Image (cartoon, rainbow, N blue to C red):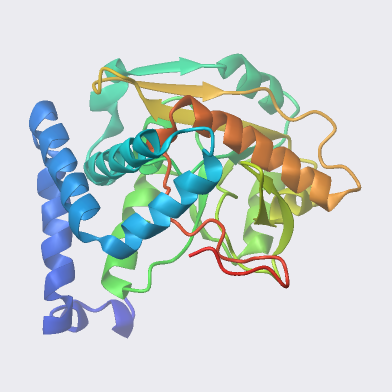
Length: 304
């Protein structure tokens, strides 16, 4: 144990709130299912009402991405998105704090033949995940069927980072810092599957601009780069909560053919198109609270 990870350090009063949050997540993971949904919905509605900055971001994203909806339907989708992400907090707690085996009966898994075919090539598969509210629970349930590592962004709070990393390491084979490109490449070349989510804005230097819901969005180039460096097949994975709010569907799509190409913008646009199509199935479950269009092409005004 390093000095930074010592129990004495995390006993400091500045971590008491984090300990409370971790305890609440453990408690929430063990709530009866209906109560879990009720608490999650209450959290989402409270955030919708009081988190004005996040509501502004969500409203902007939905106005930009769904111009075909009238104002009332856009407003309803904003509210539904907050509810879904509130429930997602309890789903994340469940994925991190409980054995996913207890939810096997709630999952329908489709497209396993695509993964089996890709793995038959004798190398790791780059799994394209999407930032749905169900993301971490989806990873836990995915582990029931196929092993995978996960690429993640380290948390700024060291105590919560330790909690989160230990939880994900229990679910996945290895939790890999998103800055560790060599680690991702090594694992894929060694035959390990790697779960990777490329649908957030990581700034101009790491990105090209490609359309996402008809909006030019900063889209990271790393997906095509990893595929080119490793020869790994790139396979989209879709995961969502079903309308009954009790069951889930996890689905692999076929690995992308002829990917990557020699055009990094076309490759980024192709990934975005796959993600957009998945989101349109259950738009309320996507993480619209994220500033997806934060980075703009030079000369364009900010959107938030």
